[in-house]
Image 1: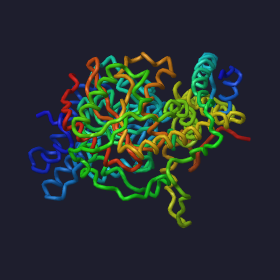
Image 2: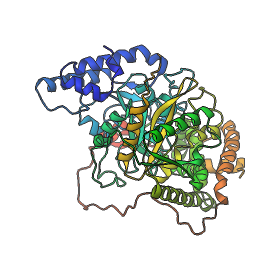
Image 3: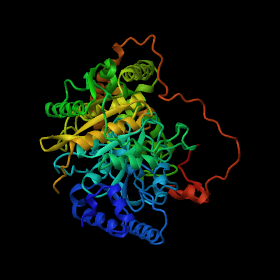
Image 4: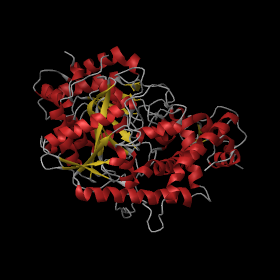
Amino acid sequence: MELYKLTAHELHKMLKERKISAVELCRSVFSRIGQVEDKIRAYITLTEERALAKAREVDEKIKAGKQLSPLAGIPTAIKDNMCTKGLLTTCASKILQNYIPIYTARAVERLFAQDIVLTGKTNMDEFAMGSSTENSAFFVTRNPWNLETVPGGSSGGSAAAVAAGEAILSLGSDTGGSIRQPAALCGVVGFKPTYGLVSRYGLVAFASSLDQIGPITKDVTDCALLLNYIAGHDPLDSTSLRVKIPDYMKALVNEVKGLKIGVPVELMGEGIQTEVREAIENAIKLLEDLGALCQEVSLPHLDYALSAYYIIAPAEASSNLARFDGVRYGYRTPQKVEDIMEMYFRTRAEGFGSEVKRRIMLGTYALSAGYYEAYYGQAQKVRTLIVNDFNKAFEKFDVLISPTSPTVAFKIGEKYEDPLRMYMSDICTIPVNLAGIPAISIPCGQADGLPVGLQIMGKPLDEETILRVAYTFERNFGYEEKPNL
Amino acid sequence: MAISKKEVEHVAWLARLFLTEEEKERFTKQLSQILDHAGKIAKLDTSKVPPTSHVLPLKNVFRDDRTRFSLPREEVLSNAPKREQGAFVVPKII
């Protein structure tokens, strides 16, 4: 039986009823990996032995009649920017190519506590900078729907792994759309929670005021399930929220009657591929047929979001990446150097890839004397205007919807040499990170044989309404397409 | 706003990055393009807008000042590119 095709909630039921064993499930996923990984290349590190040992342990627990977590025995992939104790964590960068963390990221640890089976660490854009997973220092990941196209980025490995059946669940991280955009391009579900809901402890920092860890799954139910276990306060992350975490599974209600849905006109205009816009319009129609009230709304400052983001994110990145100096961990230049300054300069020049260097340069420039006010200061004020736009819209609407990505998956290499064009790929997702609000991407059809993603944005900490709308849409839309591999 | 090659060289120095001639040329062109696009925000009147330093209403996070165990030295040094006698080794500084 092809167990890798099923969802975590279906598999949990089968494990509990002893219709299958965790070892069988683990073998099914690894045999799928054996079949397709050569083509997809979703993983930087595979952990088959460790996974089988863990699966055996879960089977022992089942045999002993112990209480079984809904995640126990479920093969799960983790983006390679989350630290895993004793296991290579590279961030897809040469500068961390030999880094073995001595601790585990909180979100991952929480999943280990539920007895997940780790399949491996997934490929990504180096330091999560990119929209196509072409910026990995090691290799390019391919989209399971069409091997000539990108899986999106930066969590491209995590999204491709789930879409191709190389993992049942996965974790990604989202700074400007890095969970939602690849989820959209690979036809799976991706959720960026409210900033601060999931601990960032042990996540290799890119832009700390924007980064957030979240689930990538096959359906909305799995998404709620995974969110249940990664959310929660952590004293080791000072930006972690002290809030009561609801049971997100209870939000999965098939009902949107009377719900007010806003459609930001700024995210439906120029630059959005016609077929993508049509798919979103059909989605809106379906939600209206189900009783939701949909209406256009203007968030005038969204037009400035991309500009503000490409000041703020690189600025934070340039400061976060200053720690990579070749002294305490990671790569160090093998060349003979005169002094420590030369060691820094050479280590960083050899260790970072070109997109990372570009952003370090941008950020350093934006923060340097004489430019700070004009760029960084102004961008943080624009951020306030964007937050205000969202607050105003949420006075009237329960959720907002838009495309997740302006286009379907594009060809490998197509935008690689043109950074500005590549940056536009995240134009619909970036405003959400600037405002710190939650948003999901779910499949809502196809264009050119490639999946289209619908983005649903919500009020801060109102993950439940987003999940309810997403669940209702999923149930009534009935998207059953799978990549043909 | 255009950025000159000289500025690129200065910023690279600030960022502790050696750049090849080819990289300097490429970054001068690309950074100018990106900054030009980002310069759009200069048009907005923000004189009365406070900057967002944080999206959450966070106050300072304090904890009790108690001594705790630190990481074992062996673990801390386990990823060191070069080590000797329980310390990180770097090229001479003085």
